[in-house]
Length: 293
Length: 246
Image 1 (cartoon, rainbow over the protein chains, first blue to last red):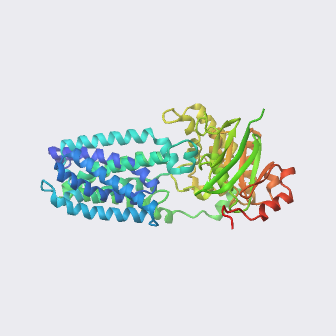
Image 2 (cartoon, rainbow over the protein chains, first blue to last red; image 1 turned 45 degrees about the vertical axis):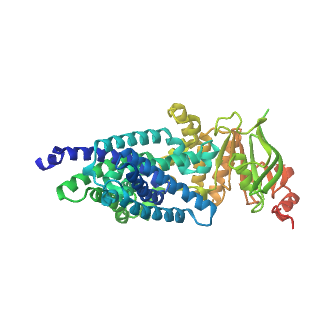
């Protein structure tokens, strides 16, 4: 038992566990709506576009959490709005527009980070370092979790209608654009909260892998969001333990655990798993006849 | 007095070019109205305009003497059922969950889903003969069942007007019969159903009224008076005004 309890003895690990629970829950819960709406690519673009915002914040105010949060939000907003502008005003389609902007933003971020006031480790921005999580990071994550969960629960009905059939939602007086903008804003917030743990490049995994896993396991959106939250927490904590025991980087360890769960669901999900379906006995003709009799 | 939907001088445009113009018509609740016309005649445009999805260039849409949208609770007057291709069938929702969505406008953000809501949802499932499929994911239904599931949701919404966009597309004979029965049940309950339709043969079986359009209104009225060979010929033979004079 000693080996199991050992990680919890260190204060930095206790903080890391708490952070894992918070970001695992928030991203897992929110991820359901990202997967349902097929926003994974947009979310990926937004995660990359955080980097120049973080870099500018690091140049102006150093590594202040509030500054980084604001910088990331502004950068993601510029890419999201810019993508919309290009789509509307030219013949470029939306996925090309947003992909073009996010690679530009990412490149700009890598350059800008060289000019930060304090020495910034690019690797920790890209891949995260949950062991370096501070008290203020945890408070920030807690606040983001509370805001995300409260907002999603409050707008659940109009959000669901909007995601399912935007036109029908409009006939019911729902402000579809406002709902979708809120969803995008929550995605950016959730990614900012997971930055310290898994970094810009891996934050997408924490957002979509739990929901994608649940999508293979369930036909209910409620199960997708609550189950996604559970998988997010479990996967993040397990990944952290794994990184401690095997002495591997924590961000990739967390994503690999979530990835393993996703692949397992793809193969063995009771209803949609490819191996399960292949092994399922055929619906025999005799059985059909029996039913008709 | 029965409730009437009245369109007065209705024009709806895309990029300033009218798709339907100066439509005047009046239809009452307790009718099943077929909206007929060739491709590009503006059938979907008219339905969307009534549903409030498209801005109106001129004229007005009134129900019970008031402009639609005025003083109405959202979703209370109109239930819109889009074309089947517009629906994401892999959406993680069951038939029962779909029908429950019909209660959302009445529930708003905070009201709890209560016994009365449950009763209405069950009633909708029963009316559309879907009780046995309530727990199924929506893609695991046949085409006809899918259409009836959307009708069940519209019933749960308790609206007065049902707008359906080509609901018969892709349905086989049995599914068409079952769907027609479902529409007639709604009509008997005093609802107004307006459904765009492109198959002329079964119009008298399904509908009691028709609206014939080809950019402009050709005829509107009961089957016996409006669905005449001359009107049909005028609707389908005339070139549609594209908004630009040669």
